[in-house]
Image (tube, one colour):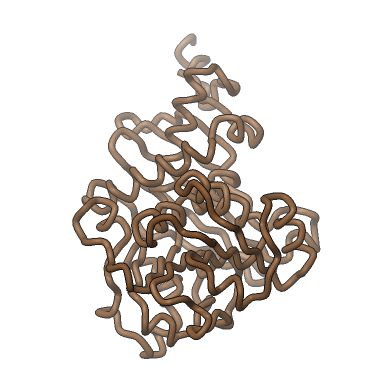
Length: 325
């Protein structure tokens, strides 16, 4: 038996925006129905290097896997490396054989963008005219691309505290660089920053708008003002992760909001187990990133690689040699 090795460029050939959205949507539905096994992600802090590692195991049907991913804020400055890097190991739950080892960095960016697009599909009002992208780094590109899969036509509004970053993103995707207030006033707002200080104010948000809060993925992070969280219908991806590291983690710990105020999980809405919000309701998707999102997309990539004979098969565990002895 051989393990398929897939590099970043090979994953990029196989994992289209459409594949990412459909895979993540199926994962949310399965999670909402209680069909997945997913322990909370494990954090390994590396404070002396301004970073951390995260281990994310999960099992869904005939697939199991784990992602080993880091977030090192100073990587580009210190080493010329990406802030986020990941490796994914896909296994067969029947016998534990490692089916594939692949780049998980692109998987992470794609499934995060897809999670926001799925949230917008189910929580936002149909046919948005404008989508604001606040934080125009790497993640913004997959947020934009996956929203293009879900919605036919919209004007993209770009804001980043670094004007050149916003301008580069705007030029690449055909967006318009605007102020923070203008981006926050869009029909759909996607925030993707590492901020630990809330900076998106409630007064800027249009009534009935939808917000994808994608940046708070560790304790202490918060992008949205607490009064905005208090006045909106907040949908989370996972109760354990959201309370410890999501957008609600800081105000929840301070007693400014109660867990009972959370409207539900996105998985429940996607699975049809919870109703969609009303047209006048301002909604927020608090995303922490689910291991089953990575698993669903990794499985789709692996199956496509098998069909197209992409990647290199190796005897990773030395089983061929052992059996020939």
